[in-house]
Length: 391
Image 1 (cartoon, rainbow, N blue to C red):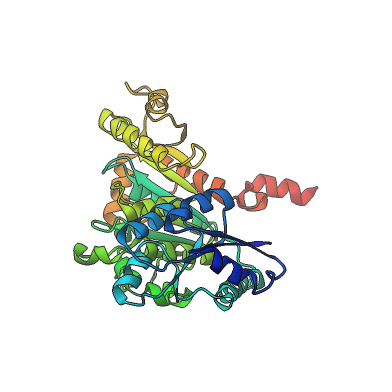
Image 2: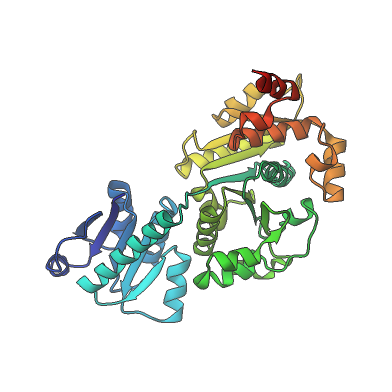
């Protein structure tokens, strides 16, 4: 695999000095150009690099906003600033904008080599441990009351029953209550606590911050008090999600319908966005607006899946009406089983445990099977296994 590094220098002299440092190592492609923070967006679109090294001699709010806007559309890119400013305020602004690292100016061949070696080491570590990136699903309600949190938690439980390693991250920062859907275990460490330690985040810290629902299902809860949620920055959320992706086969994000910078960062990082709604006019109207926002953010139709919860045939509003309003295909319907679902929520017991024969439980099992298929042998009926053993 080739590592792409794009270097943005503040002068032609700097480009010449870096080129004098010698060719890039095998497996690394380096491109250089003169530019500034304003250049980052075009470089991301044109070159799609793994790493951007940006000379940043003069800091200002506009430049940092340009960097943040560009990185929101390419959250997987590792951006490194080279700056003379080492103040705590500057470092905080940089990390909040999505910058991964700040190195002390001036830009030199040694700095370029350091960045390349770091990227190579990261790639080699992933290959050595056989780590493949997990799938990230973001479930977001068109508006409150859609049932997205119930679906997130119970789908995660269904996946864990298939022996998949699953993480649920509660990104409803102000009113998150994911933990009560899965047993209401005591919250030891929350999103806020982990975001505060983003600079030293590693797999051990992430694991210790998780509520262990069962052997395969772990949960990162929202803070119980909304007082400190401002400490959860988009950059911190990116680090948490990307680390979770490397540690779990599936990562489910319970996202607030308020499209603030944290929610947008989470949606950017998701492989699939599940827009959840019910078949009534307020939900359809909200979903129409949400879908329009997704288009503005550059999300493709393939990335967004519409989930219709509490679905009943024969209503005044049809699935075709949903598709016409949102310009998106309905990817899945979840039947209406109000009493069983409410009992599950009130007891804090996953529906698959409380009422495994319920239609909603069957729908969740089917969804989990599509996301992470199990072997035919495991799902075969007893008569199929008997026939197979006799053949």
